Length: 245
Image (cartoon, rainbow, N blue to C red):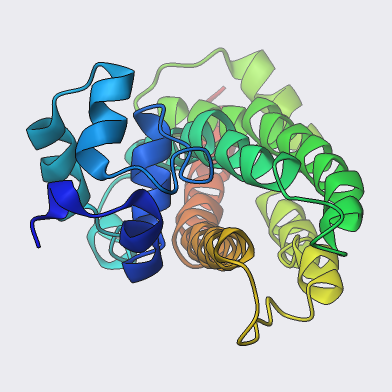
């Protein structure tokens, strides 16, 4: 059977990732479950072949750590900021949509998730913006200082106020951000009678958690070591400048 003739429900059942691809085309799989892909695309005014190409090319991103390790710290920060943007503007809204459309009478855990997940999202977004406004801005200032682009008084003041090692220790204590979600879902456990909707949701939650771990590893294993060395270099640079004066 051609993929365009398959029902949406069957497509998503074959590959849960298809649900997120279809979502970005405006096709919520639970609203079009009995329609074929071609019928759903026509209902949305979409080119079926374009949607099929997106489905066929869908793939989870590979672990970026190896390629990032050789990059300067400013490009590592650019990567992390892009990941933040993807989390906030794409993945979290999709997860919220899946949770909000759970059928509460048929899915006992729905109400718990609908209560807890928005709290997680609020805390998570606050953490991201705080990290960008403090840690990332400080590291960027250190990086600019190595290129002699700095105000000595401001640089000294910021280095008195911040510490990369302190940020690194604090970061490790907040790495397991999804522990509450994981516990109330019994570690995303599914059974033979678990609905397709819940299977898709749990698959996406697991994937999001894996991506958070990858993100944390990039910060812990690449960003912080590079930044500690950078801070040491700038600190020595300031000491030498003071001696010359």
